[in-house]
Length: 352
Image 1 (cartoon, rainbow, N blue to C red):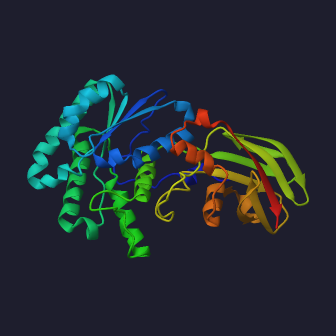
Image 2: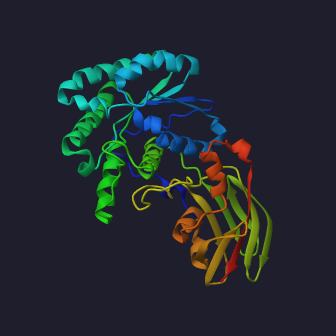
Image 3: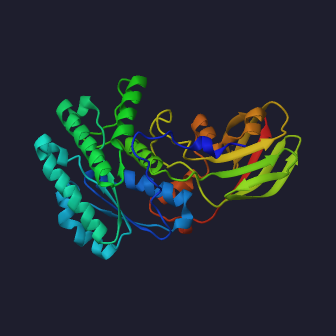
Protein backbone atom coordinates (compact mmCIF):
# COMPACT_ATOMS: atom_id res chain seq x y z
CA UNK A 1 0.00 0.00 0.00
CA UNK A 2 1.29 3.49 -0.81
CA UNK A 3 2.67 5.18 2.31
CA UNK A 4 1.24 8.63 2.87
CA UNK A 5 4.55 9.71 4.40
CA UNK A 6 6.00 9.62 0.89
CA UNK A 7 3.44 12.20 -0.20
CA UNK A 8 4.75 14.95 2.06
CA UNK A 9 6.76 17.94 0.96
CA UNK A 10 10.48 18.27 1.44
CA UNK A 11 11.27 20.64 4.34
CA UNK A 12 11.17 24.31 3.37
CA UNK A 13 14.09 26.60 4.14
CA UNK A 14 11.54 28.86 5.84
CA UNK A 15 10.15 28.20 9.28
CA UNK A 16 7.40 25.55 8.94
CA UNK A 17 3.86 26.86 9.27
CA UNK A 18 1.20 24.92 11.09
CA UNK A 19 -1.86 24.14 8.96
CA UNK A 20 -3.96 27.26 9.62
CA UNK A 21 -7.53 26.21 8.92
CA UNK A 22 -10.16 25.16 11.44
CA UNK A 23 -13.78 24.11 11.08
CA UNK A 24 -16.10 26.94 9.97
CA UNK A 25 -13.24 29.37 9.36
CA UNK A 26 -13.99 32.46 7.28
CA UNK A 27 -10.98 33.01 5.03
CA UNK A 28 -10.17 36.40 3.47
CA UNK A 29 -7.76 36.69 0.55
CA UNK A 30 -6.56 40.32 0.42
CA UNK A 31 -4.21 41.57 -2.26
CA UNK A 32 -3.41 43.32 -5.48
CA UNK A 33 -3.97 42.34 -9.11
CA UNK A 34 -2.83 38.72 -8.75
CA UNK A 35 -5.53 38.29 -6.11
CA UNK A 36 -8.06 40.03 -8.33
CA UNK A 37 -7.20 37.73 -11.26
CA UNK A 38 -8.14 35.07 -8.77
CA UNK A 39 -6.54 31.87 -10.04
CA UNK A 40 -4.31 31.25 -7.02
CA UNK A 41 -7.15 31.85 -4.51
CA UNK A 42 -9.45 29.64 -6.58
CA UNK A 43 -6.80 26.91 -6.66
CA UNK A 44 -6.42 27.12 -2.89
CA UNK A 45 -10.19 26.93 -2.46
CA UNK A 46 -10.36 23.95 -4.85
CA UNK A 47 -7.69 22.09 -2.89
CA UNK A 48 -9.25 22.90 0.48
CA UNK A 49 -12.85 22.11 -0.47
CA UNK A 50 -12.13 18.89 -2.35
CA UNK A 51 -9.67 17.51 0.20
CA UNK A 52 -11.06 18.96 3.44
CA UNK A 53 -14.85 19.24 2.99
CA UNK A 54 -15.36 18.64 6.71
CA UNK A 55 -13.87 22.07 7.48
CA UNK A 56 -16.86 23.87 5.91
CA UNK A 57 -14.80 26.96 5.03
CA UNK A 58 -16.20 30.25 3.73
CA UNK A 59 -14.05 32.41 1.43
CA UNK A 60 -13.97 36.08 0.51
CA UNK A 61 -11.71 37.88 -1.97
CA UNK A 62 -10.92 41.56 -1.39
CA UNK A 63 -8.92 43.67 -3.84
CA UNK A 64 -8.91 46.97 -5.73
CA UNK A 65 -7.05 45.30 -8.59
CA UNK A 66 -3.69 46.92 -7.96
CA UNK A 67 -2.46 48.37 -4.73
CA UNK A 68 -0.02 47.95 -1.90
CA UNK A 69 -0.15 47.31 1.84
CA UNK A 70 -1.14 50.98 2.13
CA UNK A 71 -4.17 50.29 -0.08
CA UNK A 72 -5.15 47.34 2.08
CA UNK A 73 -4.91 49.48 5.19
CA UNK A 74 -7.25 52.09 3.70
CA UNK A 75 -9.86 49.52 2.66
CA UNK A 76 -9.60 46.93 5.42
CA UNK A 77 -12.42 48.10 7.68
CA UNK A 78 -14.76 48.43 4.70
CA UNK A 79 -13.84 44.97 3.44
CA UNK A 80 -13.54 42.95 6.61
CA UNK A 81 -16.01 44.36 9.10
CA UNK A 82 -19.00 42.87 7.20
CA UNK A 83 -17.18 39.63 6.32
CA UNK A 84 -15.83 38.97 9.84
CA UNK A 85 -12.88 36.76 8.81
CA UNK A 86 -11.16 34.37 11.17
CA UNK A 87 -8.16 33.97 8.83
CA UNK A 88 -6.60 36.66 6.62
CA UNK A 89 -3.99 36.19 3.88
CA UNK A 90 -2.25 39.32 2.61
CA UNK A 91 -0.82 39.21 -0.93
CA UNK A 92 0.87 42.56 -1.35
CA UNK A 93 4.47 43.54 -2.03
CA UNK A 94 4.84 43.28 -5.79
CA UNK A 95 3.67 46.86 -6.30
CA UNK A 96 5.28 48.04 -3.05
CA UNK A 97 8.58 46.85 -4.52
CA UNK A 98 8.45 49.61 -7.13
CA UNK A 99 9.74 51.99 -4.44
CA UNK A 100 13.02 50.05 -4.23
CA UNK A 101 15.33 50.19 -1.21
CA UNK A 102 14.21 53.65 -0.17
CA UNK A 103 10.65 52.36 0.25
CA UNK A 104 11.56 49.57 2.68
CA UNK A 105 11.01 51.49 5.94
CA UNK A 106 7.49 52.55 4.92
CA UNK A 107 6.81 49.06 3.57
CA UNK A 108 7.68 47.52 6.95
CA UNK A 109 5.54 50.08 8.73
CA UNK A 110 2.54 49.35 6.50
CA UNK A 111 2.96 45.60 6.94
CA UNK A 112 3.02 45.98 10.71
CA UNK A 113 -0.08 48.19 10.71
CA UNK A 114 -1.92 45.76 8.40
CA UNK A 115 -1.14 42.79 10.62
CA UNK A 116 -2.21 44.71 13.73
CA UNK A 117 -5.47 45.86 12.15
CA UNK A 118 -6.44 42.40 10.90
CA UNK A 119 -5.60 40.86 14.28
CA UNK A 120 -7.64 43.59 15.93
CA UNK A 121 -10.61 42.36 13.89
CA UNK A 122 -10.12 38.92 15.41
CA UNK A 123 -8.33 37.20 12.53
CA UNK A 124 -5.26 34.98 12.37
CA UNK A 125 -2.92 36.58 9.85
CA UNK A 126 -0.65 35.11 7.14
CA UNK A 127 1.60 37.03 4.76
CA UNK A 128 2.46 36.04 1.19
CA UNK A 129 5.67 37.27 -0.41
CA UNK A 130 5.57 38.84 -3.87
CA UNK A 131 5.82 36.37 -6.75
CA UNK A 132 9.01 35.68 -8.69
CA UNK A 133 9.63 36.75 -12.28
CA UNK A 134 11.11 35.75 -15.59
CA UNK A 135 13.86 38.37 -15.88
CA UNK A 136 13.62 38.28 -19.68
CA UNK A 137 10.04 39.60 -19.53
CA UNK A 138 10.00 41.58 -16.28
CA UNK A 139 13.37 43.28 -16.63
CA UNK A 140 16.34 42.78 -14.32
CA UNK A 141 15.70 45.73 -11.97
CA UNK A 142 11.98 45.03 -11.32
CA UNK A 143 12.73 41.33 -10.76
CA UNK A 144 15.48 42.19 -8.28
CA UNK A 145 13.21 44.60 -6.41
CA UNK A 146 10.54 41.92 -6.01
CA UNK A 147 13.19 39.52 -4.72
CA UNK A 148 14.34 42.18 -2.25
CA UNK A 149 10.81 42.74 -0.95
CA UNK A 150 10.16 39.01 -0.69
CA UNK A 151 13.37 38.62 1.34
CA UNK A 152 12.47 41.63 3.50
CA UNK A 153 8.96 40.32 4.22
CA UNK A 154 10.31 36.87 5.15
CA UNK A 155 12.88 38.39 7.49
CA UNK A 156 10.32 40.74 9.02
CA UNK A 157 7.98 37.83 9.67
CA UNK A 158 10.77 35.85 11.28
CA UNK A 159 11.65 38.83 13.48
CA UNK A 160 8.05 39.54 14.53
CA UNK A 161 6.80 35.96 14.74
CA UNK A 162 4.36 36.41 11.84
CA UNK A 163 3.82 33.41 9.52
CA UNK A 164 5.10 34.23 6.03
CA UNK A 165 4.48 31.97 3.04
CA UNK A 166 7.47 32.46 0.77
CA UNK A 167 5.79 31.85 -2.57
CA UNK A 168 8.64 33.66 -4.33
CA UNK A 169 11.09 30.79 -3.81
CA UNK A 170 9.20 27.90 -5.48
CA UNK A 171 8.01 30.14 -8.33
CA UNK A 172 11.61 31.21 -8.96
CA UNK A 173 12.58 27.53 -9.02
CA UNK A 174 9.73 26.80 -11.40
CA UNK A 175 11.01 29.46 -13.79
CA UNK A 176 14.58 28.16 -13.56
CA UNK A 177 13.67 24.50 -13.99
CA UNK A 178 11.03 25.09 -16.64
CA UNK A 179 13.48 27.16 -18.64
CA UNK A 180 16.05 24.37 -18.41
CA UNK A 181 13.52 22.02 -19.96
CA UNK A 182 12.51 24.51 -22.66
CA UNK A 183 14.22 27.87 -23.07
CA UNK A 184 10.93 29.42 -24.19
CA UNK A 185 9.21 28.53 -20.91
CA UNK A 186 8.01 31.44 -18.79
CA UNK A 187 5.87 31.84 -15.69
CA UNK A 188 4.87 35.35 -16.81
CA UNK A 189 1.89 36.43 -18.89
CA UNK A 190 3.18 40.01 -19.00
CA UNK A 191 5.87 41.87 -17.09
CA UNK A 192 4.44 41.05 -13.64
CA UNK A 193 1.38 38.76 -13.78
CA UNK A 194 1.71 35.01 -14.06
CA UNK A 195 0.28 32.70 -16.68
CA UNK A 196 -2.85 30.80 -15.59
CA UNK A 197 -0.81 27.60 -15.24
CA UNK A 198 1.79 29.35 -13.07
CA UNK A 199 -0.99 30.70 -10.84
CA UNK A 200 -2.20 27.08 -10.48
CA UNK A 201 1.36 26.21 -9.43
CA UNK A 202 1.24 29.06 -6.89
CA UNK A 203 -1.89 27.53 -5.34
CA UNK A 204 -0.28 24.10 -5.07
CA UNK A 205 2.93 25.53 -3.62
CA UNK A 206 0.96 27.57 -1.08
CA UNK A 207 -1.15 24.59 -0.03
CA UNK A 208 2.05 22.59 0.41
CA UNK A 209 3.89 25.31 2.33
CA UNK A 210 0.94 25.48 4.75
CA UNK A 211 1.75 21.89 5.72
CA UNK A 212 -1.68 20.70 4.73
CA UNK A 213 -2.23 17.21 6.18
CA UNK A 214 -2.14 14.51 3.49
CA UNK A 215 -5.65 13.68 2.32
CA UNK A 216 -5.82 10.56 0.19
CA UNK A 217 -8.73 8.54 -1.12
CA UNK A 218 -7.43 4.97 -1.04
CA UNK A 219 -9.00 1.69 -2.15
CA UNK A 220 -7.16 -1.60 -1.64
CA UNK A 221 -8.63 -4.81 -3.04
CA UNK A 222 -7.59 -8.33 -4.03
CA UNK A 223 -8.08 -9.90 -7.41
CA UNK A 224 -10.60 -12.34 -5.90
CA UNK A 225 -12.86 -9.39 -5.04
CA UNK A 226 -12.01 -9.04 -1.35
CA UNK A 227 -11.94 -5.48 -0.01
CA UNK A 228 -8.74 -5.20 2.00
CA UNK A 229 -8.82 -1.57 3.14
CA UNK A 230 -10.41 1.76 2.29
CA UNK A 231 -9.78 5.34 3.35
CA UNK A 232 -12.08 8.26 2.55
CA UNK A 233 -14.11 6.15 0.12
CA UNK A 234 -16.55 3.22 0.07
CA UNK A 235 -16.35 0.18 -2.22
CA UNK A 236 -19.37 -1.88 -3.27
CA UNK A 237 -20.64 -4.16 -6.06
CA UNK A 238 -17.29 -5.89 -6.50
CA UNK A 239 -17.22 -8.45 -9.31
CA UNK A 240 -14.15 -10.58 -9.96
CA UNK A 241 -13.51 -12.65 -13.08
CA UNK A 242 -10.63 -14.15 -15.01
CA UNK A 243 -10.47 -10.91 -17.02
CA UNK A 244 -10.07 -8.65 -14.02
CA UNK A 245 -12.20 -6.75 -11.55
CA UNK A 246 -15.07 -4.26 -11.47
CA UNK A 247 -16.43 -2.28 -8.53
CA UNK A 248 -18.26 0.89 -7.53
CA UNK A 249 -16.30 3.54 -5.65
CA UNK A 250 -17.99 6.35 -3.73
CA UNK A 251 -15.51 9.01 -2.64
CA UNK A 252 -15.88 11.05 0.53
CA UNK A 253 -13.04 13.40 -0.43
CA UNK A 254 -11.92 14.27 -3.95
CA UNK A 255 -8.15 14.56 -4.39
CA UNK A 256 -8.52 15.38 -8.07
CA UNK A 257 -6.77 17.88 -10.36
CA UNK A 258 -8.12 21.28 -11.44
CA UNK A 259 -9.83 21.23 -14.86
CA UNK A 260 -7.55 23.83 -16.44
CA UNK A 261 -4.12 24.34 -17.96
CA UNK A 262 -1.69 22.69 -15.57
CA UNK A 263 1.92 23.65 -14.83
CA UNK A 264 4.80 21.22 -15.51
CA UNK A 265 4.16 18.15 -13.41
CA UNK A 266 7.91 17.54 -13.02
CA UNK A 267 8.27 20.77 -11.03
CA UNK A 268 4.90 21.20 -9.25
CA UNK A 269 3.54 18.69 -6.69
CA UNK A 270 0.32 18.09 -8.63
CA UNK A 271 0.23 14.34 -8.12
CA UNK A 272 1.83 14.17 -4.68
CA UNK A 273 -0.88 16.50 -3.36
CA UNK A 274 -3.60 14.65 -5.31
CA UNK A 275 -3.40 11.06 -4.03
CA UNK A 276 -6.35 9.25 -5.62
CA UNK A 277 -5.07 5.74 -4.99
CA UNK A 278 -5.96 2.26 -6.16
CA UNK A 279 -4.23 -0.99 -5.22
CA UNK A 280 -5.18 -4.47 -6.41
CA UNK A 281 -3.07 -7.44 -5.37
CA UNK A 282 -3.05 -10.87 -6.96
CA UNK A 283 -3.89 -10.05 -10.57
CA UNK A 284 -2.42 -12.28 -13.26
CA UNK A 285 0.79 -10.88 -14.69
CA UNK A 286 0.55 -8.59 -17.69
CA UNK A 287 -0.98 -5.33 -18.84
CA UNK A 288 -4.34 -3.94 -17.69
CA UNK A 289 -6.64 -1.15 -18.83
CA UNK A 290 -8.31 0.91 -16.08
CA UNK A 291 -11.66 2.54 -16.90
CA UNK A 292 -14.17 4.55 -14.88
CA UNK A 293 -17.77 5.26 -15.85
CA UNK A 294 -17.07 3.50 -19.16
CA UNK A 295 -14.19 5.84 -19.96
CA UNK A 296 -10.61 4.63 -20.31
CA UNK A 297 -8.23 6.21 -17.80
CA UNK A 298 -5.07 4.51 -19.01
CA UNK A 299 -2.99 1.37 -19.11
CA UNK A 300 -0.88 -0.13 -16.35
CA UNK A 301 0.43 -3.51 -15.19
CA UNK A 302 -0.44 -6.07 -12.56
CA UNK A 303 2.89 -5.33 -10.85
CA UNK A 304 2.11 -1.59 -10.67
CA UNK A 305 -1.41 -2.24 -9.36
CA UNK A 306 -0.02 -4.56 -6.68
CA UNK A 307 2.16 -1.69 -5.43
CA UNK A 308 -0.62 0.88 -5.84
CA UNK A 309 -1.19 3.56 -8.48
CA UNK A 310 -2.34 7.16 -8.38
CA UNK A 311 -5.29 7.46 -10.75
CA UNK A 312 -4.38 11.11 -11.39
CA UNK A 313 -0.94 10.04 -12.61
CA UNK A 314 -2.56 7.45 -14.86
CA UNK A 315 -4.79 10.12 -16.42
CA UNK A 316 -1.89 12.54 -16.91
CA UNK A 317 0.22 9.79 -18.48
CA UNK A 318 -2.64 9.04 -20.87
CA UNK A 319 -3.25 12.74 -21.64
CA UNK A 320 -7.02 12.29 -21.46
CA UNK A 321 -9.96 13.74 -19.54
CA UNK A 322 -11.14 11.69 -16.58
CA UNK A 323 -14.89 11.30 -15.92
CA UNK A 324 -14.47 13.41 -12.77
CA UNK A 325 -13.12 16.27 -14.87
CA UNK A 326 -16.74 17.34 -15.47
CA UNK A 327 -17.25 17.60 -11.73
CA UNK A 328 -14.05 19.65 -11.36
CA UNK A 329 -15.14 21.91 -14.22
CA UNK A 330 -18.56 22.55 -12.66
CA UNK A 331 -16.87 23.45 -9.37
CA UNK A 332 -14.42 25.74 -11.18
CA UNK A 333 -17.33 27.47 -12.90
CA UNK A 334 -19.08 28.27 -9.62
CA UNK A 335 -21.06 25.30 -8.30
CA UNK A 336 -20.30 23.94 -4.86
CA UNK A 337 -19.90 20.25 -4.18
CA UNK A 338 -23.37 19.94 -2.65
CA UNK A 339 -24.90 21.32 -5.87
CA UNK A 340 -22.82 18.97 -8.01
CA UNK A 341 -23.73 15.90 -5.99
CA UNK A 342 -22.00 12.86 -4.58
CA UNK A 343 -19.37 10.99 -6.57
CA UNK A 344 -19.79 7.35 -7.51
CA UNK A 345 -17.74 5.79 -10.24
CA UNK A 346 -17.95 2.26 -11.63
CA UNK A 347 -14.39 1.09 -12.22
CA UNK A 348 -13.24 -1.72 -14.51
CA UNK A 349 -9.73 -3.16 -14.41
CA UNK A 350 -9.41 -5.50 -17.40
CA UNK A 351 -6.55 -7.53 -18.78
CA UNK A 352 -5.36 -6.23 -22.12
